[in-house]
Amino acid sequence: MNAREKRKMLALLERGRRDLLHSLRGVSPGLAQRAPSPGKWTILDCVEHVAIAEDYLLAQIRNSTLAETPAVPPQREALIAERALDRSLRFESPEAVRPRGQFPTLAAALEHFFASRERTMRFVGSLPPDLRRRIASHPLIGPANCYEMLLMMALHPRRHARQIEEIRAALSGKIPKTESEGR
Image (cartoon, rainbow, N blue to C red; front, top):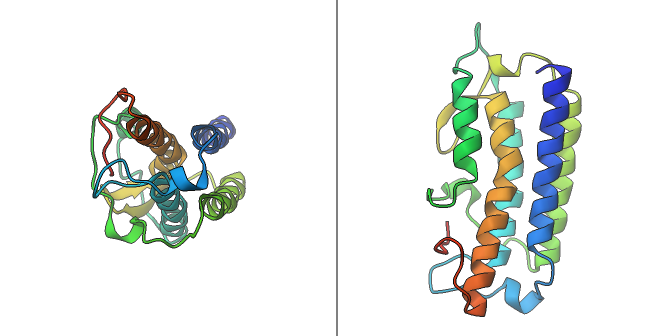
């Protein structure tokens, strides 16, 4: 990852943090714990998921292995960027990052996410240039280079910010832009 890519990645990570926070403006503690329908995630569930996924994926990157050559074609990065924010594409959350009520409040979950995102951003600031040669395991797509992993991490809170907007719309009786779903 060159200096320009590093700046771009840090900006994407910051935007994800900012978009998640923006989606939570005006969410009361009661609203954060209400599900739009049985079996669907609450707003608190979404933030817990984003927080624990950040920790999980950063650990995967730190445990990555070095390959002789880049293992994944760069075209996949564009596909990841496109699909990560597309809420019409539904993914079942991997077991390792499903919310389990780990945080009693939205504030606690958000505080954990912010601390995790700060660790990720510090890590990006100190990364070696060979991220596309470092291979980690992503719970949904399997082997991925570490640049792709960081790209998914950067976009992940933005995807769930959109889900939070869908949940808020469902709870207020408004028709959401896309159908609200828990995962």
